[in-house]
Length: 277
Image (cartoon, rainbow, N blue to C red; front, side, top):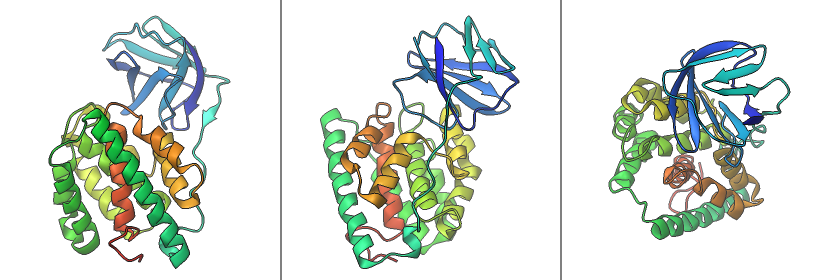
């Protein structure tokens, strides 16, 4: 395997850890409490991923991980990280929509959200990946964030760890919601802080992988597909392609993350049934 890029939160140049888990498409490494993911270059960037060509995982869980002077080794694998490009997300859209919700901007975002929702619905129906009960929990979170912030921790607890997958559906939805509040509303927004605090409290209730991405999101760090979708909703550029890229993540993680993006827009007031605030 040959490393071709890495996320901006991958530590370096020296560290040690252990192999956490190995799958057909990815290998997770635990380093100082952080979960690094080594995966095929065909998959998009995350803040803590190392993308490689020639993917063929042969490491085993529990084996030692070592990085010395930028050379990462685990199991039989040796990856040279010294000169690989570092993926860094672009700056958030400016100005934040929550600070300048003009009628024209609001209508543009709402129209984009309707398009995203339609593409998501088709994707979910075609693959039969709907998760019963997720919508109800999402609505409870929306009500808490918009009207009863003291109920946010309880609403978050109902979502964390809910549903199937290494990153359960409720986790993915929360990440998508935080992405919108962070990149469109900005982390200074009260809703972001309220939701992030709830996520930090309850992140331990889910899988190790789910907890990793929840904690990253609570600090304002997100994967390439989610960032691309959120930014496209603001700019209007390439929205169908960005939506489809986000939907392709995992078996159902993409669809659940997109549901979270749509929920985040509703929290900020950008939906057909809520006036922009």
